[in-house]
Image (cartoon, one colour):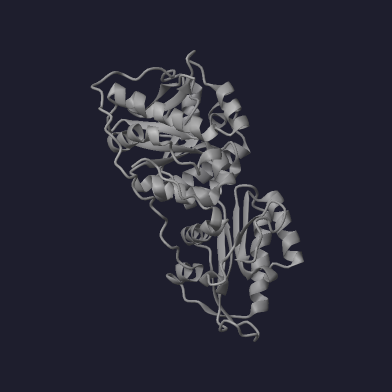
Length: 407
């Protein structure tokens, strides 16, 4: 099947100048190849099709002579983020990475389904010089809590926020996104702007960039001097790996001292944080480390199953923890020599409330004495996000992505 790309302009809402273009896949008829994507999902070739679409987007931009500072936004299919590009596409992808100002769009569906893999992928893309955009924010609240973990450069508001009548749900998204953007300097981009009212809505929601039919339909790029596609280097560059994360006790200990704690009191605090999470809703992440699977007893499994029915993402780590230790709870089995086994952590991260209990077992390995802990309790959102970021890569570590992007 012949694939091409159409490009929709993204404009600066204050100046009206072109900031960049989003590449959109098209078939020979000029329409989105929905049937091809359905067939690819059915026969297991979705990754190949997705890479073809990305390569088409890059090739079209190179042929049109698109150059920085005008940016190119390219979508990533969430179900195939683990897959490497085909060898035959490496040259065009490599030239694009070197010559274009690329933004990789990650849909919020991928945030909920592949949080650990996304950390590796985002780190890898950034190391190749690519910026990160989170797409469709607001369509599903689970993406909001992961914003400080993934640290996107651009937040793309879903068109439903722009085109629907404002309500409490859209106001909640607005305040969460605005708080993150003010704290980090991230840019807010509104999709689906088709009328002057939509434009006013976008500006009200804090957007400084926008796209939609009010500014232009998808079409060809303005023609400039083409950029020559150069051969990809052989062999392919090594895959950048996330640095070894700090222990939660070290992250929190940078700002406050750890002090001795009564284990029974720490257990009460742990349960309190988990109950706080129940009241927060789907835009919340809960990540806990219990050291060993036997510490995740039946009553804890029942409670975490209840959490998973209410909270967006729930993760439990420990030695011997299965992939799904409770219904809809993601598990991560720690190696017996993982230093994280000596820590007890419960982290709750949401746009409205962030807290982490981090405790360190002071008993020597192999002893059977009553556990002695030193602990800290933090409500610093940045530190809690760092704790979550340190723990998430342990989810299904044996299946972590080790696939290269183009250089």
